[in-house]
Image 1 (cartoon, rainbow, N blue to C red):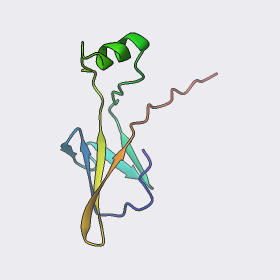
Image 2 (image 1 turned 60 degrees about the horizontal axis):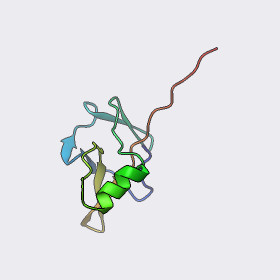
Image 3 (image 1 turned 90 degrees about the vertical axis):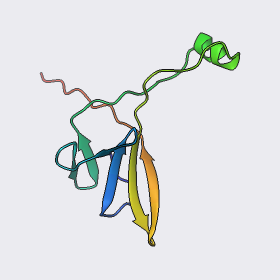
Length: 93
């Protein structure tokens, strides 16, 4: 995941509110956060799922990972939420 341009060190990384440790949970390569783990993303809702939510028949309980980066701007703590990226599968010939 690419860090937003305004993020400078030092910064903190959280996944679903849980603090992550650099070089244990993720690496920073240039301006990119690299994780070994896969992230869950809720995806689009189909018509029936949307209708059941709209009518209050059911809720949504799918896993949806959230990646937050906390950093300082002019002495104030700011949070940027990053969208998980699904790694591309490399195809060899």
